[in-house]
Length: 162
Image 1 (cartoon, rainbow, N blue to C red):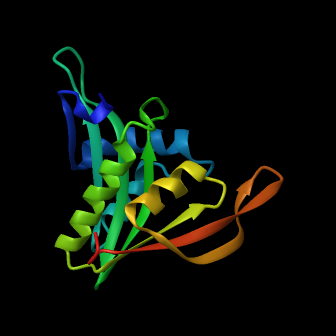
Image 2: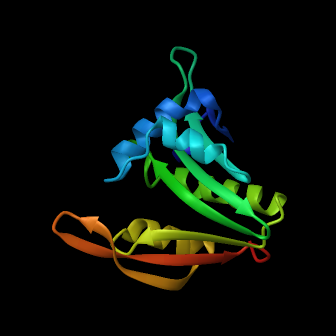
């Protein structure tokens, strides 16, 4: 049974109360973390939205398993960030978040969805390719990895085929 098959797992729009947990998860997932203020500013932009996956049982407050932050402008959408708690990776959380983000983008009029991903993030690249993203560009030496740099891959999904 995957983590998303369990009772008490929900995907829903983020709200102001989600920002603290989102910022903590972003800090745990990325070298250059976005704090609550940055996330709040992004969400205030026209067309921006965030979806969260939470788990809850009767004895504890909801736990953030992952989130996706995106924006829609005209007929294009862009994933700005996606993060999944390390203890819930490879359980379908990222896939469900990306599918929900694509559905939200379609509902907002987008026909294509873009994202950037580090070329060394093989699990994310595999997920995005399974979802139908294709590489449309490469930014050499974009992300810092200590003393080295890694390329960023720009990927696009045709939402008409999603």
